[in-house]
Amino acid sequence: MTLSNRQFTSVGRSEFIAVEENVKLHVIDLGEGPTVVLIHGWPLSNAMYEYQYQFLVAKGYRVIGITLRGFGKSDKPFGPYNYDIFAEDIKIVLETLNVEDALLGGFSMGGAISIHFAAKYSGAHINKLALFGAAAPIWSEAEAVNGLIDLSVTNRPQLLENFGKIFGASETAISAPLAGWLGGINFEASFYATTQCLIALRDEDLREDLGKINVPTAIFHGTKDIICGFHLAEQMHAGISDSYIVKFENSGHALFIEELEKFNSELLAFLAK
Image 1 (tube, rainbow, N blue to C red):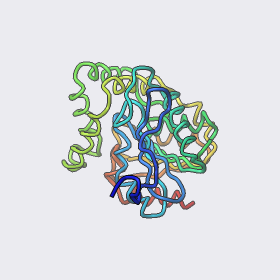
Image 2: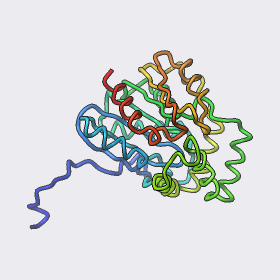
Image 3: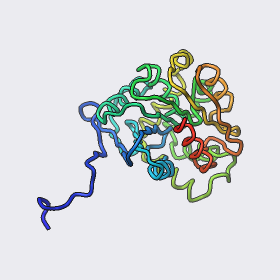
């Protein structure tokens, strides 16, 4: 059989989308039906949502996972890494894919970026927002983040090991195979983007953005989250008018795998509303 007469099985969706000259983002685009767009956290990639993609496709949804520049299989250019740049990149991807009326979900830094996207573009392309352990409206004390930045430029493996130890509700909350899987994803990130995004996490302030959110919003948050404390969920709920909190009582920051079944079922319930 030659290529010219082969029966193609692909639906023609590209895995890479250009957002500017010399910068392409890796995109997972699976399924048919209403659209769910997922944005990963620092320093992960769209691979983190593996167990959401399979679940949602089986439930009749189209799922799109976007890897931000600097991470995973996306290009890793020199230049600025901030919430404005990331939001602009997401906008171009959604325009390219003709996405409308989607649920936009973001984890950790991806949650903060999703908030900024929804505020910056007045809810364009989306009709719902889901925030998973979001690092917003202000992530942490600057002095504490400066220590992480210093470690990122001197011993990134140690930084990621330390981060992994507090990712779950306890050091043993995430199984060794899953922890190894997540660690492998983290090391795909550009060292430069890893550091620059810590600076963005330290410096970005989304308090004014919260009041600009004009779509229904679900806030998923682990009550045992050390990285993004539960007080952040309460602040987001207070600032976003049409929002509600889903507590994950047995989760730290890794609620998407620590309470996988609940996470997926609550996301499905929000989609159905």
